[in-house]
Length: 328
Ligand SMILES: N[C@@H](CCC[C@H](N)C(=O)O)C(=O)O
Picture (cartoon, protein in one colour):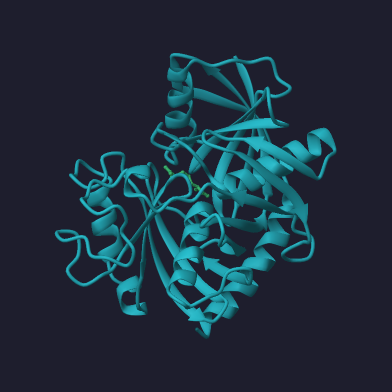
């Protein structure tokens, strides 16, 4: 079969969009997993952190399903949702939309460019839960807020939260960030382990100055990525809980692929959090592939068209971000 793909990224966290909204295609669950394994493999001709299936929804403007590079399905993807928001906006001609995801219907909308010429979208990240059962994290206490995980690290403190995909966050020094500690412990909790039976996205956060943080994430089902939107949202909440930032104020979140903005919304009456995640939705190329379901690894790319202008505007933005980070 011939499948059209759109390669996009949010902060360098890159995805292949497959349009099931306007194209008459359908996949089994096994097909989706095998497509992710074949098309995301960076040793093959394409490569990406995940696949975003954009589908029809009975209740919302569209539905997004996210598959990680290892073929596992995730409940949410913040950077991916910005790309899907743009894709559906351009398809339907409506700047404000609601997208169905595995656990919530989320508001998304076009907003002011984060850098001149970069299509920018704000997406809602919710629901947020600190209950360890929602990750799941196997421990006796109901929550882990700046607490220790004996056996994982004797010196670091962690906060566990679901947004609603699972995150483990630690605020660290430059020295720890530069070490191999994150990789070692992230691999441990994403392999067979007694704490996180479904694995977990692991982020290290370095506070830069008030309103500015750096976040690096080892993603469940992928490994280190340039950025993870839900992780940057979860990290922003954690910095607010630690008094480093404040709810309702914009937080600039830097990452290895660029920068986003997060605003933590706290409904004190309901004791509920959500986050506005704001950042780019950039297109890299359109491609068409010939692929046999059942033999996905042997696909052939038949056509590829690059979005040169978008790529160069985004790299100018990245240079500016790198210059800012160089002095920090
Ligand atoms: N990169 C994403 C998150 C993708 C899913 C994650 N790896 C998981 O398994 O939970 C983002 O931008 O949020």
